[in-house]
Image (tube, rainbow, N blue to C red; front, side, top):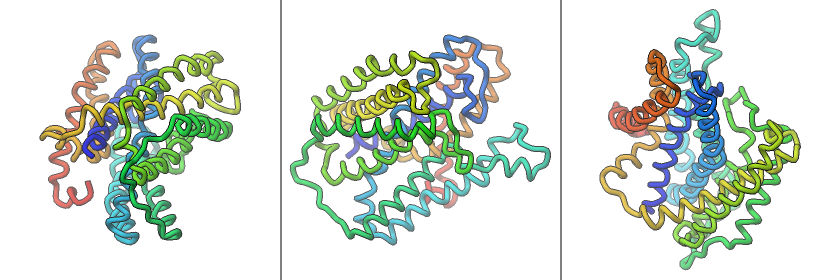
Length: 356
């Protein structure tokens, strides 16, 4: 199903642009950040980050969950776990202990080299890889314990509107409850997990992806389903988002009414946006020419290396006396193609292709 791979390319590009925007948003959420020269630009980039965060990593987990059952069925439990540890574990360990400290070079993180190293080891953006390892391991344990193997239906049907609404409400309520103790702005330093407040979305979307594979939902998504998803995303934005943001920063969590409205918004927005994009890509992006094939093949490599490129571009552009919007535009125009262009030579390094 080429359209699913093509959607993964879009999500990877959004990750690169998301962290490029973080560089110039004024928010201390990236390796290198600059104070914006314009409050309007700072607000615009922050809004872009909030809308992205509401859905795009959940979509990554959905696609990961979708590909998991077929991989497990083909390989069996031992080979599946071994392949996941090899393909995901090696990049994670190398990034955690080697690459992440290198990206921090030039930033004061301690008085001695050892102190600097201990303060800079971490997952960085590869927290996602760590999460997938945990989810895949949990899936393998579940399959082994239940010895469950269900065939895919011959005539799959998309989920009903009632099921979609029920899922959104359930996700919103669980998310609201989690954010009473894990607000949106909380960072978990032990594993470098930057968005703990979205854990209900990530887990449920991964599970939903596995269920979608068994029931053949992606191939059954229609244009009507996509329009309904788009309407859900727009309606939630018009209804719930203003209510969530009306009371300052109360939307971050701690059991406030604003936090409930925000959970309703980002849950509905995530589900609606994913449905709309699945329908769009199933209709319009069902094939891969040489370019899309290259982008798809190198998407995971781009995810692993993009932190270097984005951070290097930020340092390089820091010497220019330009408005923030101009720097962001230049960085975005350079960084995104540079990541995909560099991915090819990186994968040609000895032994790297087997992992990336």
